[in-house]
Image (cartoon, rainbow, N blue to C red; front, side, top):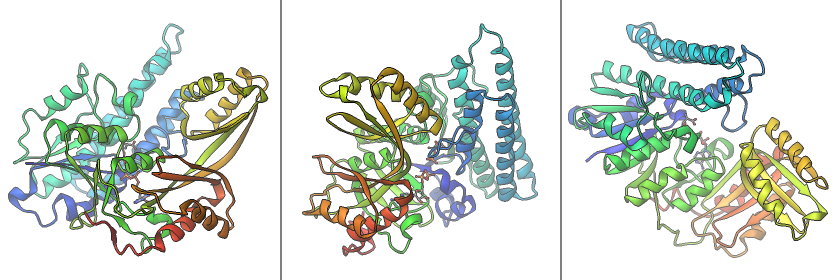
Length: 476
Ligand SMILES: Nc1ncnc2c1ncn2[C@@H]1O[C@H](COP(=O)(O)OP(=O)(O)O)[C@@H](O)[C@H]1O
Ligand SMILES: N[C@@H](CC(=O)OP(=O)(O)O)C(=O)O
């Protein structure tokens, strides 16, 4: 029986520590095997290759797609190359391993650069449209990030005598794309996990287009598909911290409590806020095959971590996590013609979707609707213009906001809403809007962007630190 284990990008950036914890540690001989590792690109690399996941700042792909200036994307690609070579130097120093690692990535980057230049030249002729090829470019670029980290891991592990094997699913040099499941099956066909340690790229090139169907966070799709196809005993996601009651980076490692158990419903709420405990679509396959999912701290391998299951519900009602999402835009549409008119509810989400703006939440009253969206300012400004054109009597306003949210598998705590609002008021934070749905798994407060971190700290202090949870809420 084997496990499938995903290593997130932030953890991959601390690779030498991973060698001493999850990859090798004290393991010898057979104990090293029966583990399949799926790796993400090193932290920040996919952001540079595509666009920043949270702020939307353009990377190579976004510059190429916008085609504002012909050389902007190639300068950005050079920047990524330098960054990748820096990582290689840090990992391997002046060794032959470094030469091998550098040659691999230089070749990939040179190939993709040539393809992109040729495509740009071709599309200067009116018969060829850049838009028709953008998704392929996006996939090629994304795949380089994972090929880099996976190849380096194999080089480093082999040097330590581990029989690591690179499974490059990014489709380089492949003639025809296979369907997702077939791609996984054929890649594992001749792998003996009891004697080899597969290091698999988080990006899978496939007919359906992993990027098109799942977009960012795709490595979790590869991970869950491998777990279900190979019949894993357990699926494990390794992260930089334990899944905690709040971001340790904001409230301080000494104030957070580790979450021992939670359910997929809570994980979905976290993912909506951009903290991907697990990609919601990745969770589905694992759930259906009843494969247990565990989130672990990559640097504390002996800790049981967090087990996510379908039916867990905290016995005692309590807030389990304070999560949130900064850098959102509130797009407020006021129109007295709106009363009793369903057109707005139908057309506005469609327009936002076409502009690839992610709607985190919405609220409405008799004559206004506000969407809380994530995306670039450029796209949001475009949305404002298009809404104005479509609904002539509408007045559209934009505000920079953040969402802070209290989440729990059993949130039916008496008076919780009042405690939440008064803790923010006591911290001098003005609440711009408040959401709680009848299912009571989450309570969201909209605050000004500048108040984001202090709001997370105030809620964590009031709703979690006051409770006596010890080190772990419900140890796994
Ligand atoms: N509730 C939380 N528990 C643990 N980490 C959190 C939490 N909320 C936010 N974080 C932050 O998430 C970061 C990891 O981000 P993520 O994108 O999930 O990483 P990865 O690269 O491993 O996929 C950590 O550095 C941590 O600061
Ligand atoms: N590196 C990719 C894929 C991924 O899933 O990354 P991470 O595991 O670091 O969230 C991204 O940023 O989208």
